[in-house]
Length: 304
Image 1 (cartoon, one colour):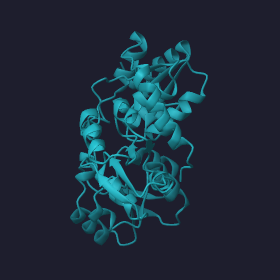
Image 2 (cartoon, helix red, strand yellow):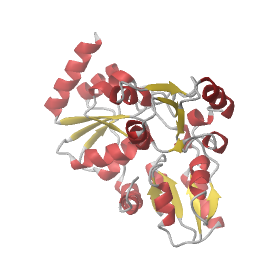
Image 3 (cartoon, helix red, strand yellow):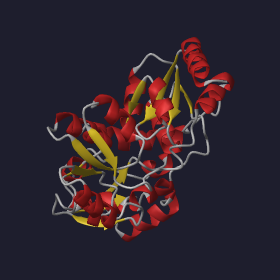
Image 4 (spheres, one colour):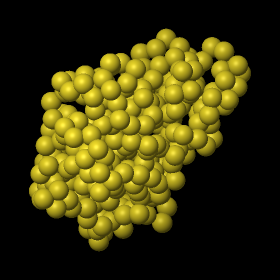
């Protein structure tokens, strides 16, 4: 089936099912093109919970679909590729986090949304890459446990005098971006601004003109008078950056910045999910309720 035919059938089925199609910023171009909303993982879940749609088709990875289920428990959440996981989210387990909490009694757990619902349920508050600094600053405790991304945690630690207990997790895709690649491109394009995600390692962040979330990147590039940017995050972000800024040039900082999990979901997968109304992601109530509390505490804090 040709792409245009699939897109038309997907849109028709969404209308028939009273569904909404969400695509993360890192999805394939053709998936972002037909989405009702594109954005970061939590922003998509928040928007989906607000809509009158009864079916949410989440084009992303597993923890994102779980977040949608946590925030919109009465809606049917479809994840077209159930095998689309997140290696960083898999680096922390409930039992290991419980053991860390026993070693640091009374220390609040701040958990990045890139984590499973079960880990969120063990946490005091969640954060995104956009609001992590504000979340940590909002806590009265002198020290925190930060889970699971050590790079984001170290970035946040620069803006507070709190003591940090870092979980030793990371995003394999962002970790593949090395300082050498950035230095080479900055030499090749001296007029370009380098912007990167806080999931990058500290050596890469030290070279950046601006460090921010994917949503922050869209805003920064749109408002900046610069005409050329070196982008230090997953390649999928280039689709919308180029679409919104046709007069600007965007250079991916490394060809290694491709997340295989984010690229799993195809138009064929979306169509199959809508036809079969599966796979469904549903978070059990005993996990959903405490996970929702951790998310709600975060949502009370403004984003950037």
